[in-house]
Image (cartoon, rainbow, N blue to C red; front, side, top):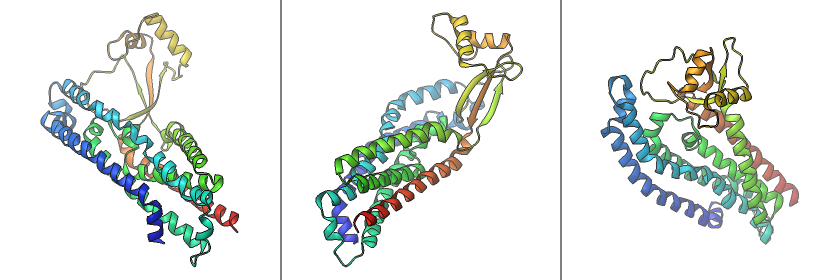
Length: 327
């Protein structure tokens, strides 16, 4: 079964491995340059002891600007799991049913349950291994930027090994069950992409900010002091203004204040800006909900558990569907 499964899916797995190798070359080259720049340029010293070095804000800002372009290019990593689902998971069973080869497979000495288990488990392990390789590479590359901005933001969070592997297995499972249900390769691929994006966006936008209870911070513009640059590794999930009694202002009230201050001009925020002076003069304060960087691993564990559970349920359902519809 191992040899048969390998022969059936070796092209997809080899393409994924070759793509990883191709991506590794520019990332290793640029990553090594960025890691050297991080140390030699004084950025590491600023991150370690911000108050002990002058001009850290400018040093760090220049470093980030130099490497932002490559960091932005890595946004395509978000689509890697979808590729596994669309091009490996979806055709796996759909192609068998579409071409009728499942009849031959089910007349061999190997039981259909064993055939399905071997086919799914071997391919899933290969997919997980390639995803882990991508995760290690991307996490290493991003390390200096994550020391500055934290690991909870999407661009850093989604490339970490637990999450990327779990989400990739989920996408693979979505493709498998889509193929079992639709039995047409193109239809299964389209359904896989649509379902994966829907679940991924929902988890990203509405579930992940509340895997853990956010901490709350209230700051008074009248008392806030400029302490100079320091790493901003917290992940802020909500920001509001509150009055002296603690009541949150509505979005409409906030817009009215900004319009009152700036009219139709461009709003400027930050220390010393007109809006900050207005807040201080009228007793308004900043209210924010955030996750500290220390929540990275607990949130990784929670997200990975969810997606692995989804994947296991979908694969079990696919096995049940195939057994039921081919008896």
